[in-house]
Figure 1 (tube, rainbow, N blue to C red):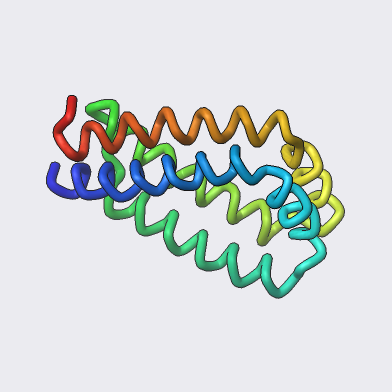
Figure 2 (figure 1 turned 180 degrees about the vertical axis):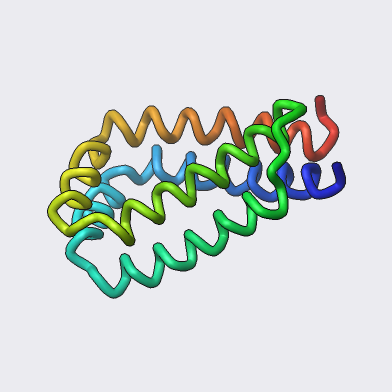
Amino acid sequence: MALTVLLAKVLGLFLVIVGAAIMLRRRYFLPVFGVYPEQRLVRAVVSMAQLLAGLFLIVMHNVWWPLPAALITIIGWMVVIEAGIYLLLPDDMVSRFIRTFNTAAWYVFGGVLAIAVGAYLAAFGFGWI
């Protein structure tokens, strides 16, 4: 449970900060992520680091109860799946994947979701709930 608390604190704060940045600066991030499929070296390196981080989460924290622990595990699986998409799919499919989600509406939705999940995890980790 100590690992769950630590991860809840770190991932919770991370999600709140990144969610707020994505929402508040979506005009900045739209073109950044729009060219991500074309940046092969960046995509490869970031995806490998992302895969490593996700695998660490899955291997070290494959816990499905209570809810905060399950959320951390789900995040780990989502990170691994996304990294796999970027590493294994051809460039045109990655471009279509990015175009699907690289819209202002998705940034608002994703930002709100990230802040909500992050606040919940941080509240759990810091003992506020």
